[in-house]
Every structure is written in C-alpha cells, then in structure tokens.
Length: 610
Ligand code: SF4
Ligand code: SF4
Image: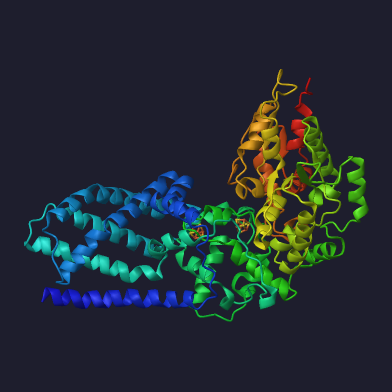
C-alpha cells in the first residue's frame, strides 16, 4: 500500500518536473545551434575549478559564496542517498541495510551540517540583510526552497536518532521523500533550476570573453532580430540565471544610473521565451535604448558564476538593429568616417603620414625589423596619444629594438564590431589582414588594448593568427633588469586605471604595476581594479555617444571619482580611449589630477644606458 502510494506521488511529481523541463528543452532544441565544445581542455579545467570547486562563486563574495558552495557540495553528495531511498520507496531494491550504504550515510553527516549552516546563513542574508543585487523584494520562492533544503537535512540527521519501524521514523522518512518530490516539481520553473543547468552552462561557455562569431553574409546572416533568432546557448543561459545580481552590481552602466541592467536582459529573455513571443523584436523585448547603453566592458559575463554570456545577446541584437538601419545617429557619423577614411575620426591620411615622418618611423620590413608597432586610430591621429607613442618609440630605441610600422593602417574594426556593424568590421579586418600578411608580420606591439583584443582574437576567426601584445607587457619584459633614473627622493603617489580590454579581456594586470613600482611610483589601488575594473565609458561605440541625452551620470565621472578617492595625485592610463574619457571627466570636475600614459611615465624615468 505504502509502495503504491509512493509510486502515485512519484509519478505525479516527476511528471510535473519532466513537463516543465521538456518545455525548456524544446525551446532550446528549436534554436539555431550555437553550442560548441571547442577547446575541450580549457572547458574541463574551468568545469573543475568553477563548478566542482565553486571558485567564481566564492571569489567575489567569500562568505555567501562559501555557504552557497556548502549547499552545492551537499546537493551532489546526497545524490546517491536520495537515489537509494527512491529505489527503496518504489519497492525496486532495498540497499539501505548494506554496510557500504551505512558508511556512506555516516560520511554524509558533515555535509548535512554544512548544508544546514549554509542555508540558514543564506536565508538570513536574503530575508534580513537583503543586498541590492538580490532585488528589492524578498522572494517567497527562495524562502520556501531554503526551508525545503533545511527540512531535508534535519530529517536526514534524525534518521540517526529514530528507531527503525517506529511511527516517528516512518513520518520522518515520508517527510523527507515528499519534500524531495515537491522540490523537484518546483525547481524547473524557479531560479533553482540552475542546480541542474549551471554545470552544463559553465561547460558550454565560450573560452573567449565577449565571443562574437563572424556573421556569414553568404548565408544571409544579419544578427539577432527577433526572439526566434536567439541561439541555443543564449536560451540555455536564460533558463540558468540564478538571479544573484553579480552582473548587475558590476555593470558600469547600471552603476552610473542608466537603464541597462544585464540581469534584466537575461530574465527578459527567459520571460519572452516562456511566453512564446517568438516573433517579437528584440528591440522591444529589451528596449533599443538599453541595447545602446552597453560599453562591452565584459564585467557581466566575467562575473557571472553560472557561465551566462551577455555580450552575444547584446551585440547580436545591435547587429540586428544595424542591419535594419536602426543604429543611433552618432554611430552613423562614425560609420561614415570608417567607410570614407578607414578611421573613426574621419581625418585625412596625410596626417598619419606626417606623424610617421616626424617620428622618423621606418616602414616594416621583416628582414630588418623584429616587431611591428601598430599605431591604431588614436596613435595615428590623436595628438595627445601620439605623445604616448613617442615615449614608446624612445623606450624601444633606447633598448635597440628593431621595429617598423605599416605604411597604411585601417581602424582595426573594433568600434564597428562592438556596435553591431559586422559588414563594416569584416571589410576593415580583411583589408588589415591582407596588409599584415603581405608585410610578413610575426609579432605586433600596440598601446591600444582594443587592438590587442580585435587583432588577436577577432582576426583569428578569419584564420589569421599573429602574436600581439600590449606595450605594457612588451616593455615590462624589456626593462625587467633596468633601474629607474629617479628612485631617490619622494615617490609620486599614483593610481593605475586598468582598461577593461587590458585587465579584464587580456588578463594583463601585473605588468603595468610592475613598471610603475619599478620606476618609483607609490601605487594606490582604486576600488574595482585589475581583472574587474570599472569601465571608463568609452567602449561599445559610447566614445561617440551624445552624453547629454544619457540618463544618470556619465560612467567616466563615476570612474574618475573612484580614482580621485585613492588620494593619488596622478592617474596613469594605458589606453587612448580611457585617457580621453577620464580627462573629460576631470575637466568637468574641475580637478587638478594629473594624467600620464604608462609609457610616458616609464620613459620619463628611464636611465640612459652607459
Ligand atoms: S558588458 Fe559591461 S556595460 Fe555591457 S551589460 Fe555587461 S557589465 Fe554592463
Ligand atoms: S546573469 Fe549570472 S550574474 Fe547575472 S543575475 Fe543571472 S546568474 Fe547572476
């Protein structure tokens, strides 16, 4: 009788679970396939570190992360116990009296205690501390799930106290099993579905931050226009979100009071899919305004503990808008500059030639030169950044590095790619690749982190592989055994602003610091640094945006204030666009903070060799 009743309940609850899972699986299966398992070794390593060891969860919020990890490890440890109890309840086989199961049960006691501790901590945090990232309202569903998990652990621990065959023991067993069944029926429709999906999502996350596969125009690909176009990984992401808000609190746009909230983007995707709004335009699902507020800094997907990738959705949707002629006006002007003059400023090529001649630069020849210095749009045309490049040239010459430049460069295409103008990006990229190939370039040094990402990672998608390093990496190695000219006396207090495309995308965080301290700086770290910096606000085409029309503060103002709060008299930058944005913020604030490019700082301290 008890077995029959258990079968009935089992089928009802498992049926509810399966129906909800099937809805989501079918939505994922109906999508264009964007799953990839390329670079298997990296994926397995990341799975071990981020899923098994829960590194990412613990790293940003150590206490809450560890408590969450206790719950996760307990969930995994109890899988065998739960299966054995199900087999027993269904009358299939009773393994509960074997010596192996007894030992396993005993081994579960510390796990159960840790899960209880973890769930009580998380419940108090959610119900009473209520961090902003978790949302304004206390979610009833979270409280119910937390009570379910606590009940499971308590009923398990009670099995050591209750005598087998007694009424109390039977009530305890039924409570345990019914809670598991209810838990199963509840989770697919809740954020707790991440317990099932996140290991898969983390495994399938691209090894590359901000991975944007090329559009294939021969196949008439135009980007994401409607919900129907969202790929399988994007749909999986939507059902995996645990609503932790890490993406939200790390987003510079949200931090500056704008409407963009990366967590909302993922949840809106989920809602649209479940509501069957398959033909709804993505500009309506997210709002076009919000889509253009993203700087592509990458903080959201870099911080997400469950492998969700926001940028393919955000930039994919921009691609769809651009292909329908719906890009904002300020981008139209920039696109015209790229189309007519191959640079973002729309300046004549003679200006770059003048700079190349004035700086006495040689045209790259693989027989004569070891490296090519890529100037970039800023280096080619911006007088301020040309000063930084002159500093780089002086360091290279002082150390007898044989370098040359291309006779002509186009913009690398980053502003076109990150704003969704894929056609223009591919035009620029293909032209540059042809020139780099013809010139026989093997190694590139550049002072622009955007060029590092685009030429290094995006050009590789056309089959063009070249070694490209940021000048901070090249010069740090070059000057590793070099003394500063002015180490005596007072050390200037300096703060370093990590550019997103250097610290977060390229993982270059220590080389700039090593150079600064080696050459006499007293370093003061700002909040949000190294591989999780706060953006300057320039990326994703926002360098060109009309700031007056933007709601909230300017991202650059928020970042400038953070840098000012270090008390350092000098801000050192290592990206031409960070420099433009932060100097603008400094001017608005009327502050006296000095700005120095990293290469200029180093060149000024370099001791001439005897
Ligand atoms: S890439 Fe940066 S700006 Fe864009 S949504 Fe993510 S965190 Fe926000
Ligand atoms: S997308 Fe990731 S980081 Fe953002 S709320 Fe969801 S799980 Fe958290």
